Length: 167
Image 1 (cartoon, rainbow, N blue to C red):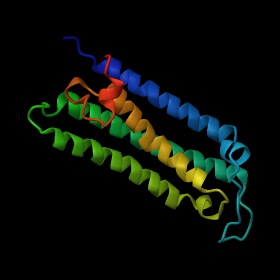
Image 2 (image 1 turned 30 degrees about the vertical axis):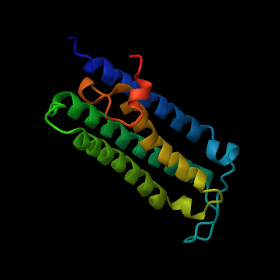
Image 3 (image 1 turned 45 degrees about the vertical axis):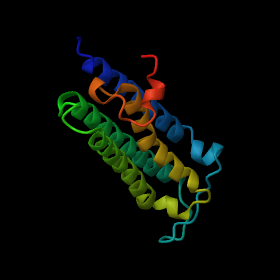
């Protein structure tokens, strides 16, 4: 059987390049502030209006952090599934726990982004920022692992049996 790992790694990178493109578009085209109605508030420490350039820098940084950690977790899942213990050595419950633990890492980074982003505390419609941080990390982790898990663990990810039915 041919080793699909290089192809799968490339396909995972393509998924995350789509993630990076969305982050780039959100930051450079001001989607949160212009198109989605996020309004910059007053900084409680300086009592001055937040500046859009400061917002874009922080927002882009935290989006990149959540996306980057998500990518690392997707690669970790693939590496464990491909070169870690064989699927028959660990129960499916253990594999599910490993996948959920990696998902929780991506969710935790999204929560840290929401809490640590200083503008998020003083912005109207900040739920949109929370949603975006939660979509970059866990959302793209889920997509990458559903579509490109190794053979040993490809049906462990919830929903993967439906997606991979014809593969």
